[in-house]
Image 1 (cartoon, rainbow, N blue to C red):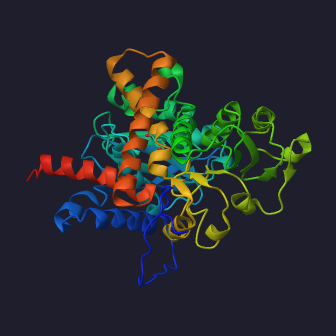
Image 2 (tube, rainbow, N blue to C red):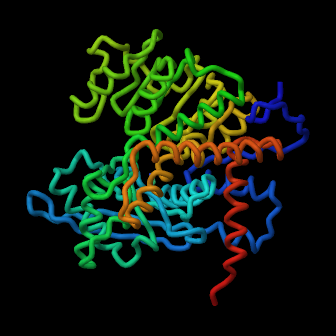
Image 3 (tube, rainbow, N blue to C red):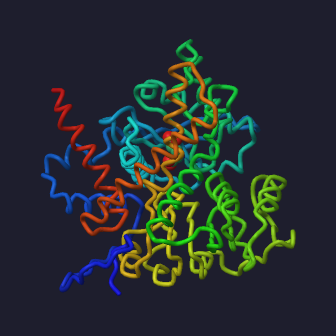
Amino acid sequence: MSQNGNGTKAPKKNGRKKRRYMTMNAYTNAMLQFDQAVGVLGLTSDQVAMIKDPRKIIQLSLPVRMDDSSIRIFHAYRVQHSVIRGPAKGGVRFHQDVSLDEVKALALWMTMKCSVVNIPFGGGKGGIVVDPRTLSLGELERLSRRYFAALAEDIGPDQDVPAPDVNTNPQVMAWFMDTYSMRYNEYTPAVVTGKPLELGGSKGRDIATAQGTCYCLDEAAKHLEMDLEGAKVAIQGFGNAGSNAADMLVKKGAKVVAISDITGAYYNEKGIDIKAAIAWKNQHKSILTDFEQAGKAEKMDDPMKLLELPVDILIPAALENQISDQNADRVQARIIAEAANGPVTHLADQILGKKGTFIIPDILCNAGGVTVSYFEWVQNRMGFYWPKSKVTEELRWFMRKGFKATLHESLKHNVSMRVAAFIVAIERLTKAAELRGLYA
Ligand code: GLU
Protein backbone atom coordinates (compact mmCIF):
# COMPACT_ATOMS: atom_id res chain seq x y z
CA MET A 1 0.00 0.00 0.00
CA SER A 2 1.32 3.42 -0.94
CA GLN A 3 1.18 5.87 1.91
CA ASN A 4 2.36 9.38 2.48
CA GLY A 5 3.59 9.42 6.00
CA ASN A 6 0.46 11.04 7.37
CA GLY A 7 -1.63 7.91 7.82
CA THR A 8 -3.56 8.39 4.56
CA LYS A 9 -3.12 6.74 1.19
CA ALA A 10 -1.16 8.70 -1.40
CA PRO A 11 -1.69 8.44 -5.14
CA LYS A 12 1.07 6.59 -6.99
CA LYS A 13 3.60 8.81 -8.72
CA ASN A 14 5.25 7.48 -11.85
CA GLY A 15 8.40 8.21 -13.76
CA ARG A 16 10.19 10.35 -11.17
CA LYS A 17 13.94 10.15 -11.33
CA LYS A 18 15.59 9.05 -8.14
CA ARG A 19 18.49 11.26 -7.04
CA ARG A 20 21.11 9.93 -4.69
CA TYR A 21 23.16 12.18 -2.46
CA MET A 22 26.41 10.51 -1.63
CA THR A 23 27.40 12.87 1.16
CA MET A 24 24.60 13.74 3.50
CA ASN A 25 25.71 16.37 5.91
CA ALA A 26 23.16 17.98 8.19
CA TYR A 27 23.04 21.23 6.23
CA THR A 28 22.46 19.45 2.92
CA ASN A 29 19.69 17.57 4.67
CA ALA A 30 18.12 20.77 6.00
CA MET A 31 18.33 22.42 2.56
CA LEU A 32 16.61 19.47 0.89
CA GLN A 33 13.83 19.55 3.47
CA PHE A 34 13.43 23.30 3.02
CA ASP A 35 13.42 23.09 -0.79
CA GLN A 36 10.81 20.35 -0.77
CA ALA A 37 8.36 22.53 1.16
CA VAL A 38 9.17 25.57 -1.00
CA GLY A 39 8.34 23.42 -4.03
CA VAL A 40 4.90 22.58 -2.64
CA LEU A 41 4.21 26.22 -1.78
CA GLY A 42 5.50 27.53 -5.11
CA LEU A 43 7.34 30.50 -3.59
CA THR A 44 9.08 33.06 -5.77
CA SER A 45 12.89 33.24 -5.75
CA ASP A 46 12.65 36.61 -3.93
CA GLN A 47 10.51 35.06 -1.20
CA VAL A 48 13.01 32.24 -0.80
CA ALA A 49 15.97 34.63 -0.78
CA MET A 50 14.44 36.53 2.16
CA ILE A 51 14.25 33.53 4.46
CA LYS A 52 16.67 30.79 3.43
CA ASP A 53 20.28 31.76 4.20
CA PRO A 54 21.67 32.39 7.68
CA ARG A 55 21.78 36.14 8.39
CA LYS A 56 24.98 36.00 10.42
CA ILE A 57 27.74 33.43 10.97
CA ILE A 58 30.25 33.94 13.77
CA GLN A 59 33.38 31.79 13.91
CA LEU A 60 35.64 31.98 16.93
CA SER A 61 39.01 30.69 18.10
CA LEU A 62 38.91 30.80 21.87
CA PRO A 63 42.10 30.68 23.95
CA VAL A 64 41.57 29.00 27.31
CA ARG A 65 44.00 28.53 30.18
CA MET A 66 44.09 24.84 31.06
CA ASP A 67 44.67 23.45 34.56
CA ASP A 68 48.30 22.63 33.70
CA SER A 69 48.66 26.37 32.83
CA SER A 70 49.06 25.74 29.09
CA ILE A 71 46.82 27.59 26.62
CA ARG A 72 44.52 25.66 24.32
CA ILE A 73 42.55 27.07 21.38
CA PHE A 74 38.95 25.92 20.96
CA HIS A 75 36.99 26.45 17.74
CA ALA A 76 33.45 27.64 18.18
CA TYR A 77 30.46 29.00 16.26
CA ARG A 78 27.27 30.93 16.62
CA VAL A 79 24.94 31.06 13.64
CA GLN A 80 21.95 33.39 13.62
CA HIS A 81 19.79 31.95 10.91
CA SER A 82 16.85 34.33 11.20
CA VAL A 83 15.66 37.34 13.20
CA ILE A 84 12.56 37.96 11.11
CA ARG A 85 9.96 36.83 13.66
CA GLY A 86 11.96 37.84 16.75
CA PRO A 87 15.43 37.47 18.30
CA ALA A 88 17.51 34.48 17.20
CA LYS A 89 16.89 31.57 19.58
CA GLY A 90 18.59 28.25 20.08
CA GLY A 91 20.97 26.17 22.10
CA VAL A 92 24.73 25.83 22.32
CA ARG A 93 26.24 22.35 22.08
CA PHE A 94 29.61 21.13 23.29
CA HIS A 95 30.68 18.18 21.17
CA GLN A 96 33.84 16.94 19.50
CA ASP A 97 32.05 16.57 16.12
CA VAL A 98 30.58 20.09 15.96
CA SER A 99 31.10 21.65 12.52
CA LEU A 100 29.94 24.86 10.88
CA ASP A 101 27.59 22.98 8.56
CA GLU A 102 26.03 21.20 11.50
CA VAL A 103 25.47 24.47 13.38
CA LYS A 104 24.02 26.08 10.24
CA ALA A 105 21.55 23.23 9.88
CA LEU A 106 20.60 23.34 13.54
CA ALA A 107 20.10 27.11 13.33
CA LEU A 108 17.77 26.77 10.35
CA TRP A 109 15.80 24.07 12.15
CA MET A 110 15.44 26.44 15.14
CA THR A 111 13.91 29.11 12.87
CA MET A 112 11.44 26.55 11.56
CA LYS A 113 10.76 25.15 15.04
CA CYS A 114 9.91 28.54 16.58
CA SER A 115 7.66 29.29 13.64
CA VAL A 116 5.82 25.92 13.72
CA VAL A 117 4.81 26.41 17.35
CA ASN A 118 4.32 30.13 16.68
CA ILE A 119 6.54 31.64 19.35
CA PRO A 120 8.02 35.07 18.60
CA PHE A 121 11.60 34.09 17.86
CA GLY A 122 13.87 33.56 14.91
CA GLY A 123 16.48 30.82 15.01
CA GLY A 124 20.10 30.38 15.94
CA LYS A 125 22.53 27.79 17.21
CA GLY A 126 25.97 27.64 18.71
CA GLY A 127 28.60 25.02 19.16
CA ILE A 128 32.06 24.49 20.55
CA VAL A 129 34.29 21.73 19.20
CA VAL A 130 35.11 19.96 22.44
CA ASP A 131 34.46 16.73 24.26
CA PRO A 132 33.47 18.22 27.62
CA ARG A 133 34.26 14.94 29.41
CA THR A 134 37.94 15.69 28.83
CA LEU A 135 37.78 19.01 30.71
CA SER A 136 37.85 19.72 34.44
CA LEU A 137 35.00 21.79 35.88
CA GLY A 138 37.26 24.84 36.02
CA GLU A 139 38.32 24.43 32.37
CA LEU A 140 34.69 24.01 31.35
CA GLU A 141 33.74 27.21 33.17
CA ARG A 142 36.60 29.21 31.62
CA LEU A 143 35.71 27.93 28.13
CA SER A 144 32.00 28.73 28.62
CA ARG A 145 32.74 32.24 29.86
CA ARG A 146 35.26 32.96 27.08
CA TYR A 147 32.71 31.86 24.48
CA PHE A 148 30.00 34.12 25.87
CA ALA A 149 32.36 37.05 26.36
CA ALA A 150 33.41 36.77 22.71
CA LEU A 151 29.75 36.86 21.66
CA ALA A 152 28.73 39.72 23.98
CA GLU A 153 28.08 42.25 21.18
CA ASP A 154 25.93 39.86 19.20
CA ILE A 155 23.68 38.41 21.87
CA GLY A 156 21.06 39.94 24.14
CA PRO A 157 17.40 39.49 25.11
CA ASP A 158 16.31 41.25 21.89
CA GLN A 159 19.14 40.01 19.65
CA ASP A 160 19.93 36.38 20.25
CA VAL A 161 19.03 34.20 23.23
CA PRO A 162 21.08 30.99 23.67
CA ALA A 163 19.99 27.92 25.67
CA PRO A 164 21.16 24.39 26.51
CA ASP A 165 21.68 21.71 23.87
CA VAL A 166 23.79 18.54 23.67
CA ASN A 167 26.21 18.42 26.65
CA THR A 168 25.30 21.83 28.07
CA ASN A 169 23.15 22.31 31.17
CA PRO A 170 21.73 24.90 33.62
CA GLN A 171 25.18 25.41 35.21
CA VAL A 172 26.67 26.41 31.85
CA MET A 173 23.70 28.77 31.32
CA ALA A 174 24.38 30.32 34.76
CA TRP A 175 28.00 31.02 33.71
CA PHE A 176 26.76 32.50 30.40
CA MET A 177 24.27 34.74 32.20
CA ASP A 178 26.83 35.88 34.76
CA THR A 179 29.45 36.66 32.09
CA TYR A 180 26.99 38.83 30.15
CA SER A 181 25.56 40.51 33.28
CA MET A 182 29.03 41.39 34.58
CA ARG A 183 30.13 42.67 31.16
CA TYR A 184 27.19 45.11 30.96
CA ASN A 185 26.95 45.71 34.70
CA GLU A 186 23.27 44.77 34.62
CA TYR A 187 21.49 41.63 35.82
CA THR A 188 20.18 40.21 32.55
CA PRO A 189 18.53 36.82 33.03
CA ALA A 190 16.65 37.04 29.69
CA VAL A 191 19.91 36.77 27.71
CA VAL A 192 19.82 33.00 28.06
CA THR A 193 17.21 30.33 28.90
CA GLY A 194 17.46 26.96 30.58
CA LYS A 195 18.98 28.58 33.68
CA PRO A 196 18.80 27.10 37.18
CA LEU A 197 15.56 27.97 39.01
CA GLU A 198 17.53 30.07 41.50
CA LEU A 199 18.64 32.40 38.69
CA GLY A 200 15.39 32.97 36.84
CA GLY A 201 14.94 29.57 35.23
CA SER A 202 11.40 28.41 34.55
CA LYS A 203 9.68 25.60 36.33
CA GLY A 204 9.24 22.71 33.91
CA ARG A 205 12.08 23.73 31.54
CA ASP A 206 14.11 20.65 32.52
CA ILE A 207 11.47 18.22 31.27
CA ALA A 208 9.96 20.42 28.56
CA THR A 209 11.46 18.74 25.49
CA ALA A 210 10.23 15.31 26.58
CA GLN A 211 6.88 16.73 27.65
CA GLY A 212 6.40 18.31 24.22
CA THR A 213 7.28 15.01 22.54
CA CYS A 214 4.69 13.24 24.69
CA TYR A 215 1.99 15.79 23.78
CA CYS A 216 2.81 15.14 20.11
CA LEU A 217 2.59 11.40 20.71
CA ASP A 218 -0.84 11.85 22.33
CA GLU A 219 -2.05 13.68 19.24
CA ALA A 220 -0.42 11.20 16.84
CA ALA A 221 -1.96 8.25 18.67
CA LYS A 222 -5.38 9.90 18.43
CA HIS A 223 -4.93 10.50 14.69
CA LEU A 224 -3.73 6.96 14.02
CA GLU A 225 -6.27 5.44 16.43
CA MET A 226 -3.65 3.62 18.41
CA ASP A 227 -3.26 3.20 22.12
CA LEU A 228 -0.19 4.47 23.94
CA GLU A 229 -1.01 2.15 26.80
CA GLY A 230 0.85 -1.07 26.15
CA ALA A 231 2.72 0.42 23.16
CA LYS A 232 6.29 -0.83 22.76
CA VAL A 233 8.90 1.92 22.65
CA ALA A 234 12.62 2.09 21.81
CA ILE A 235 14.59 5.22 22.72
CA GLN A 236 17.99 6.13 21.32
CA GLY A 237 19.75 8.56 23.67
CA PHE A 238 19.25 8.77 27.42
CA GLY A 239 20.07 12.41 28.04
CA ASN A 240 17.56 15.07 29.05
CA ALA A 241 15.03 14.35 26.28
CA GLY A 242 15.39 10.56 26.10
CA SER A 243 15.36 9.76 29.80
CA ASN A 244 12.45 12.07 30.62
CA ALA A 245 10.44 10.80 27.65
CA ALA A 246 11.03 7.23 28.84
CA ASP A 247 9.84 8.12 32.31
CA MET A 248 6.71 9.89 31.04
CA LEU A 249 5.78 7.15 28.60
CA VAL A 250 6.08 4.45 31.24
CA LYS A 251 3.72 6.53 33.40
CA LYS A 252 1.26 6.48 30.48
CA GLY A 253 1.42 2.67 30.45
CA ALA A 254 3.81 2.23 27.52
CA LYS A 255 6.55 -0.40 27.61
CA VAL A 256 10.05 0.95 26.96
CA VAL A 257 11.91 -2.13 25.69
CA ALA A 258 15.20 -0.50 24.69
CA ILE A 259 17.31 2.50 25.66
CA SER A 260 20.81 3.55 24.69
CA ASP A 261 23.55 6.11 25.12
CA ILE A 262 27.24 6.39 24.23
CA THR A 263 27.98 3.30 26.35
CA GLY A 264 25.69 1.04 24.31
CA ALA A 265 22.09 -0.14 23.91
CA TYR A 266 20.16 -2.08 26.54
CA TYR A 267 17.16 -4.30 25.81
CA ASN A 268 14.47 -6.03 27.81
CA GLU A 269 11.51 -7.50 25.97
CA LYS A 270 9.35 -7.23 29.09
CA GLY A 271 10.12 -3.53 29.51
CA ILE A 272 13.05 -1.80 31.16
CA ASP A 273 12.69 -0.50 34.72
CA ILE A 274 13.18 3.15 33.77
CA LYS A 275 13.38 4.42 37.33
CA ALA A 276 16.26 2.01 37.91
CA ALA A 277 17.95 3.14 34.67
CA ILE A 278 17.71 6.81 35.67
CA ALA A 279 19.04 6.02 39.16
CA TRP A 280 21.90 4.01 37.57
CA LYS A 281 22.74 6.89 35.23
CA ASN A 282 22.77 9.37 38.12
CA GLN A 283 25.18 7.15 40.03
CA HIS A 284 27.51 6.74 37.02
CA LYS A 285 28.41 10.28 35.90
CA SER A 286 25.26 10.64 33.80
CA ILE A 287 25.86 7.59 31.63
CA LEU A 288 24.51 4.03 31.58
CA THR A 289 27.94 2.33 31.91
CA ASP A 290 27.47 -1.43 32.48
CA PHE A 291 23.73 -1.02 33.04
CA GLU A 292 23.31 -4.71 32.11
CA GLN A 293 24.98 -5.47 35.46
CA ALA A 294 21.94 -4.03 37.24
CA GLY A 295 20.09 -7.10 35.91
CA LYS A 296 17.37 -4.96 34.31
CA ALA A 297 18.32 -5.39 30.65
CA GLU A 298 20.71 -7.12 28.27
CA LYS A 299 23.35 -5.21 26.36
CA MET A 300 22.77 -5.34 22.59
CA ASP A 301 25.70 -6.38 20.38
CA ASP A 302 25.15 -3.54 17.94
CA PRO A 303 23.58 -0.37 19.41
CA MET A 304 22.36 0.74 15.96
CA LYS A 305 20.06 -2.30 15.92
CA LEU A 306 17.92 -0.53 18.52
CA LEU A 307 16.53 1.49 15.61
CA GLU A 308 15.33 -1.68 13.90
CA LEU A 309 13.50 -3.33 16.79
CA PRO A 310 9.88 -4.44 16.36
CA VAL A 311 8.34 -1.56 18.33
CA ASP A 312 5.34 0.71 17.89
CA ILE A 313 7.20 3.90 18.67
CA LEU A 314 10.82 4.78 18.01
CA ILE A 315 12.25 7.90 19.65
CA PRO A 316 15.63 9.01 18.31
CA ALA A 317 16.80 11.37 21.07
CA ALA A 318 20.52 11.63 20.32
CA LEU A 319 22.22 13.15 17.28
CA GLU A 320 21.67 13.74 13.57
CA ASN A 321 21.71 11.25 10.68
CA GLN A 322 20.91 8.11 12.66
CA ILE A 323 18.27 6.78 10.28
CA SER A 324 19.59 6.97 6.72
CA ASP A 325 19.11 5.14 3.44
CA GLN A 326 21.40 2.48 4.95
CA ASN A 327 18.91 1.33 7.60
CA ALA A 328 15.54 3.01 6.95
CA ASP A 329 14.04 -0.01 5.21
CA ARG A 330 14.67 -2.09 8.33
CA VAL A 331 12.95 0.33 10.71
CA GLN A 332 9.78 -1.34 11.96
CA ALA A 333 8.20 1.31 14.19
CA ARG A 334 4.85 2.73 13.18
CA ILE A 335 5.67 6.14 14.66
CA ILE A 336 9.04 7.88 14.79
CA ALA A 337 9.03 10.76 17.27
CA GLU A 338 12.09 12.91 16.62
CA ALA A 339 13.17 14.18 20.02
CA ALA A 340 16.63 14.79 18.50
CA ASN A 341 17.33 17.35 15.79
CA GLY A 342 17.84 15.90 12.31
CA PRO A 343 17.92 12.16 13.17
CA VAL A 344 16.35 11.08 9.85
CA THR A 345 18.03 11.95 6.56
CA HIS A 346 16.16 13.18 3.52
CA LEU A 347 16.64 9.87 1.69
CA ALA A 348 15.46 7.89 4.69
CA ASP A 349 12.38 10.11 4.76
CA GLN A 350 11.43 8.95 1.28
CA ILE A 351 11.90 5.29 2.21
CA LEU A 352 9.91 5.62 5.43
CA GLY A 353 7.19 7.64 3.71
CA LYS A 354 6.62 4.80 1.26
CA LYS A 355 6.40 2.34 4.14
CA GLY A 356 3.75 4.50 5.81
CA THR A 357 5.80 5.33 8.89
CA PHE A 358 4.30 8.31 10.69
CA ILE A 359 7.18 10.67 11.49
CA ILE A 360 6.63 13.49 13.97
CA PRO A 361 9.38 15.78 12.67
CA ASP A 362 11.99 17.34 14.96
CA ILE A 363 10.90 20.91 14.31
CA LEU A 364 7.56 20.01 15.88
CA CYS A 365 8.35 17.01 18.08
CA ASN A 366 11.14 18.56 20.16
CA ALA A 367 9.77 22.12 20.17
CA GLY A 368 8.66 21.78 23.80
CA GLY A 369 12.14 22.82 24.97
CA VAL A 370 12.23 26.10 23.13
CA THR A 371 8.57 26.76 23.93
CA VAL A 372 9.28 26.67 27.66
CA SER A 373 12.43 28.71 26.94
CA TYR A 374 10.03 31.30 25.54
CA PHE A 375 8.00 31.14 28.77
CA GLU A 376 11.25 31.59 30.73
CA TRP A 377 12.18 34.66 28.68
CA VAL A 378 8.69 36.11 29.21
CA GLN A 379 8.91 35.50 32.97
CA ASN A 380 12.39 37.09 33.13
CA ARG A 381 11.17 40.17 31.34
CA MET A 382 8.09 40.46 33.55
CA GLY A 383 10.02 39.62 36.70
CA PHE A 384 7.01 37.49 37.64
CA TYR A 385 7.23 33.71 37.85
CA TRP A 386 4.64 31.11 36.92
CA PRO A 387 3.64 27.98 38.84
CA LYS A 388 4.46 24.71 37.13
CA SER A 389 0.78 24.06 36.38
CA LYS A 390 0.67 27.18 34.19
CA VAL A 391 3.83 26.14 32.31
CA THR A 392 2.37 22.68 31.66
CA GLU A 393 -0.98 24.03 30.55
CA GLU A 394 0.53 26.61 28.18
CA LEU A 395 2.98 24.09 26.76
CA ARG A 396 0.18 21.64 26.00
CA TRP A 397 -1.72 24.42 24.21
CA PHE A 398 1.25 25.47 22.03
CA MET A 399 2.18 21.89 21.16
CA ARG A 400 -1.38 20.91 20.25
CA LYS A 401 -1.77 23.99 18.07
CA GLY A 402 1.52 23.22 16.31
CA PHE A 403 0.57 19.58 15.80
CA LYS A 404 -2.90 20.44 14.48
CA ALA A 405 -1.60 23.08 12.07
CA THR A 406 0.97 20.58 10.76
CA LEU A 407 -1.50 17.72 10.39
CA HIS A 408 -3.88 20.08 8.59
CA GLU A 409 -1.22 20.98 5.99
CA SER A 410 -0.18 17.35 5.71
CA LEU A 411 -3.70 16.26 4.81
CA LYS A 412 -4.36 19.30 2.62
CA HIS A 413 -1.26 18.88 0.44
CA ASN A 414 -0.97 15.12 0.87
CA VAL A 415 2.60 15.43 2.11
CA SER A 416 4.52 14.03 5.06
CA MET A 417 4.33 15.67 8.48
CA ARG A 418 7.88 16.97 7.92
CA VAL A 419 7.05 18.76 4.69
CA ALA A 420 3.85 20.02 6.33
CA ALA A 421 5.71 21.41 9.34
CA PHE A 422 8.10 23.25 7.00
CA ILE A 423 5.08 24.59 5.12
CA VAL A 424 3.52 25.95 8.32
CA ALA A 425 6.83 27.53 9.32
CA ILE A 426 7.73 28.95 5.90
CA GLU A 427 4.31 30.49 5.36
CA ARG A 428 4.55 32.39 8.66
CA LEU A 429 8.12 33.48 7.93
CA THR A 430 7.33 34.64 4.41
CA LYS A 431 4.38 36.67 5.63
CA ALA A 432 6.49 38.30 8.36
CA ALA A 433 9.34 39.05 5.91
CA GLU A 434 6.92 40.65 3.47
CA LEU A 435 5.35 42.81 6.16
CA ARG A 436 8.75 44.00 7.36
CA GLY A 437 10.10 44.70 3.89
CA LEU A 438 13.66 45.84 3.27
CA TYR A 439 15.36 48.29 5.63
CA ALA A 440 17.67 49.87 3.14
N1 GLU B 1 18.45 23.12 22.20
C1 GLU B 1 17.03 23.04 22.23
C2 GLU B 1 16.51 22.79 20.82
O1 GLU B 1 17.19 22.29 19.97
C3 GLU B 1 16.38 24.19 22.95
C4 GLU B 1 16.64 25.55 22.37
C5 GLU B 1 16.11 26.71 23.21
O2 GLU B 1 15.49 26.48 24.23
O3 GLU B 1 16.33 27.84 22.78
O4 GLU B 1 15.35 23.02 20.55
